[in-house]
Length: 88
Image 1 (cartoon, helix red, strand yellow):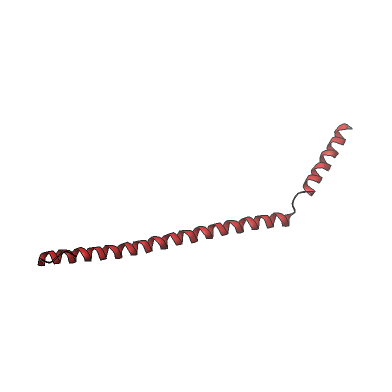
Image 2 (tube, helix red, strand yellow):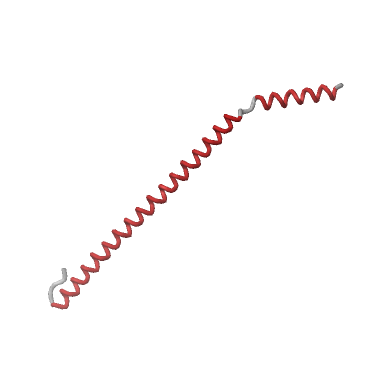
């Protein structure tokens, strides 16, 4: 008799535990929110990578322009020195 009552008690507690859990709709909403969050993080990551690449490209363009200006200045200085003029 005790075994039967124990089995009934376990079955009742299991049913109560399952009944108090989240519904299928709630679980789907939670999973969708999780997927949306992951997608937002991935988009932010890609945007960050793109911004860093654009900044690096801009820095490279600026460095190239500065190098060109510096080499032009050196070339002018060398030409002036060969002519016997003063250095700029």
